[in-house]
Length: 313
Ligand code: CP
Ligand code: NVA
Image (tube, rainbow, N blue to C red):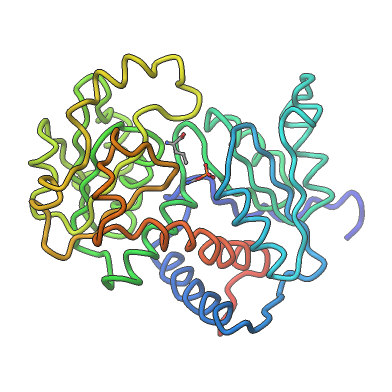
């Protein structure tokens, strides 16, 4: 391509609603295929000579390992950039960082604070950008969670997910997923931390309902899920949150109100004895280790889709 030519606009995964139901059907089918091959130790390397740049402005275990291992398994390489090691920490504008990095690599993953930061990056990127978590959304995690549900129970369409706790990045991404994939979310949060209907209404009309009582939100649910009371970036509120969320711990009596075959999920890391009782997260309904492993397989399908397009088996 001549140096002056403007490349076509790339496809990004900045929030769950960036993709259609058909695209998620494709990703779920590809995740299953890629996972099966991986379990049989069969090489699958469509991303040979391709490079992923990962920019982390917040801590990570699962996202870092799953993207780096996944990119290597697909035949490519991953470059890890922590904010403090880059010129971002010395004030280089995110737009300039995007222009530069995206001329050197094939795909970028960013974990940062406000969604507006990743949107500004994407606007100036020549290559696909993946949201590895922002204050507002965590779409890669919900992609893996939906896959995990499908793997254990079949289609999530028409099912009920109970979200217990903070109306945080995970919660709002579940609301988007409900609207795209056709299921319902029962949300129960302390009043001061509740879903903002203005923000959710635009993404999930008719796909969620608020419950003051967490037990009521769990009644009849197919999946019960929660997350830490204090997300990264909100640490100064930790003491107040511990008091305010004390009645929002998912425990065995709450799980007993859900359907008998209900699953329990948590994106991890977890604080046992805060947002979930140890006997629930370590109990028979919990699929949290499959959920964590599936970050690897689902993101490999996502990388394949963004870099290679719609690949058929
Ligand atoms: N669930 C999740 O994103 O974990 P990490 O913060 O460890 O990446
Ligand atoms: N809501 C949590 C998720 C961590 C994976 C956070 O943003 O810290």
